[in-house]
Length: 316
Length: 289
View 1 (cartoon, chains in turn purple, red):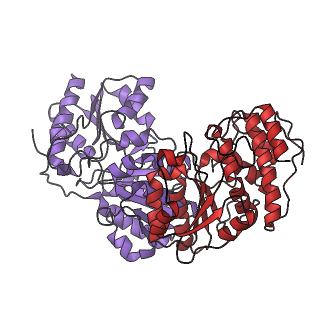
View 2 (cartoon, rainbow over the protein chains, first blue to last red):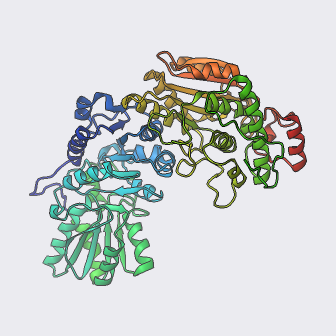
View 3 (tube, chains in turn green, blue):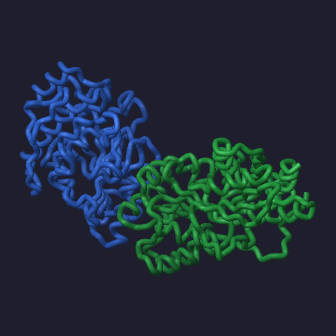
C-alpha cells in the first residue's frame, strides 16, 4: 500500500484558517464569542484569547456544561463558537447538542476540532469517526465538512451569519487546497470538482484530495471518474447526487468516519429512494490499531489506491 | 376573562391581577392559590402531568413571575429582560399557568395542555411559547444554560439576572455540578439557582436513592452563597430572590413539600405523575378554596 504522506503540493492545517477568520469576524462583530473546554491551544484560540480576553469562555474540562453555556450565551444575544475536540463535543455532549443547540434552535456554532483520525496514535478514544453519523441524526442542525482552508474560512463566515445551530468539522490533518474558489462556498450545494462519465467518487473533508488523485489514477487506465466534494452534509445536494447516479455506473463514497450513517449513509438514503445505484461505502470500519493519522488512513484504504480499487469494481 | 369550558374547568377560578407592580406576599399567597387550582384542573383535563412537582414549585414560580423577574409579557424578547429557566421541565403545567396568568398568553390556552398539536407540550418549548427561555425536559440542562446567560449578561453589559429552578433529584445529574463549579469560579453574582427541595424523586425519597445531603455545604464549597428558606413562604422567598449575590452566585435551598396544598397528595411518592380523578380534583379544590 502506498503511503500518501508525500505530496508535491503545499498542505494545510485548517485550524489556522478557522482561527484567522474567526478573529477577523470578531473584530467586526462584538456578538461573536468563543467557548472551549481547556482547549485554547488545541482549538487554536490563543490569538482569539489575546485579542478578546473577555469574549473567550473556557469552562474547563466539562463538555456538557460547555454546550449548555454556549446555548445560554446565545440566549443572551451572543454568537458562540463552541470549540472542542470533535469526539468529546459530539460524544460526551450529544444530548446537549440535540436539546440545548438544535431543539432550542439557538444560533450557535459547534466546532468539532481535529476530527476523524487526526489524533492518530492516541487511539480510538480520540478518533472522531462517529461524529457525522451522530450529528446527522439531529434535526435542524446544519452540518459542514470543509475540505481545505478556503472552505474552512467560508464555512466560518457562513456559520457566523446563519440563523440556527451549525456543526462544523475543523480539520487538523494537513490537506492540500482542492476547492475552486471562483465557485464560492454554498451551503446545500456539492462541488463537482472533476467531470466524469464512468463512475462517481463522492468524498468529504480529508478524502476529497485523495478522491481527486484516485480519479487521476483511473484516468490513466481509461476510466472516467467524476469527483464530488460534499462539504455540506446537511443540507445535502440531492440533485447533484441523483445526477451522478443517472450519468455514471456507480458511486464510491469516502469519508474519514464510520461507513454507517455518515456521508455514505446520506448518499445511500437519497439514491435508494430517487435513483438506486451500485455503491461502495468507504470509511473507518473498525476501532483503529496504533499508528499516526496518515498510516491509519492508508490502513483503512482511505487513500487514492483504495478509492480507485472500489471504483474499478463499479466501472467494470 | 371567559372561563374555560373544558372538562375539569374550575368555576371558582379568578383571573390574575392585571397590575405589573410587584405583588406583596399576601397577594402572592392568593395568586399561588389560584395557580394551584388551575394546575389541578389543567392536569385533570389533559389526563397527564406532574402534579406533585407542580404544586411543590408553585410558590417559587409565583414569587418569581409576579414579584421578582424584570420581564414584560408585551415584549418577551427584550434584550435586557431577566432570564428564567425551569430546569425541571416536567413541571411545565406550573410554568404555563404562571406565564398565562402573568399575561404571556391567554389563560384559556391552558385547556390545550398536551392536546394534539398544542404548543403547550409536556415540556416547555421556547420556539413556541412566549416567556419560555429554554427547552428543558432531560434533567441537568437548565443550570448550564443559565450560567451561559449570566455570563452573556456581563459580556454584553446588559445587567440582567439569570434564574434557574431545579428539582432536588435532578441534582444527581453530573452536568449540574460542572455548571455549579464554573458559576462559583466565575463569581456570577447575577445568577440565582433555586432548588425545589421536596425530598422526593420519581421513584422514591432522594435520601433513599442517592442522598444529596448536605446540599447547602456542597454549594457553599462550590463557591455559592446559600440561602435556606421555606419554599412556601412568600415573604421569605421574596426576600432571598430579590437580592442578587454579593460577589458569588446565589443558591436558594427552598424547602418544599411535594404536592403542597392538597392533603392527600402532599409528600407522597406515588403522586409524582399520577393524575387526580374528578372526585379527587373536587376534593382538592375544596382544600384550596
